[in-house]
Image (cartoon, rainbow, N blue to C red):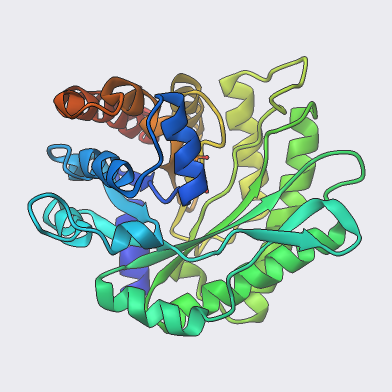
Length: 330
Ligand code: 13P
């Protein structure tokens, strides 16, 4: 078994999945604003410390995706966050994309950037202890979008990123996210996601990415958040598994879904239903949730040091539910 295959399998081990705690500084600022907390480095660090030091998170969480600022920070006991996670039996990972830029001639779309300098940054992160990376491409559904051009450029960049990661012994999380924003139907989400995934796997293959040493992080097939008819968790699961069966090579060890704006409850229901349909699927069907693992923890903490324990309890409670759902046992 290659080292990359070993890491990828570890990331989607039974009962476990990934915590996405790699919100960029502006994005974590939006989350902190919801609890009226200022977006300072100290507050960001205190919140991440709450998550990473929650007792025995390694029971449910296989890996944590960090942001560049966070991978360089230390917990209050003086240990780096990387060491804190390693002690919990959790793999440290790092987001390496650098946000988005405009697509020429298509003002409503964006492509992800960050390839410049990546060759130098990857070994640095590996030296700090990172075992895997993440790059997120963002596809919007709307009038006349996504365009083929946007899908193609995003897929090519995801492939280049993934290849560079593997050359540095870092397992890539390949994340092409079709956003749920909009009033489109679940059928439209299926159609766009299928096209995106097929394009991504063509590009990954072209540059020689080893499928057994990566994780796919897709959206579920779901109704647009403004769609009048919202599909049930069962319908989401059926269409999601169908789409993946038509697009994802069997060598990929695991698929770790993003939550994408689903509530904590719905993200558990949908993942549970998906795993109930997993018989015969060649890959593990796991999670890499951000908001659906953190929302109640953030609220319970509320930015107050005396609430760290209740914040951690809320986090562990949700992590346990997601873990049960990940095995279809909710
Ligand atoms: P959400 O689960 O909140 O969508 O975040 C996952 C993630 O990492 C998006 O890139």
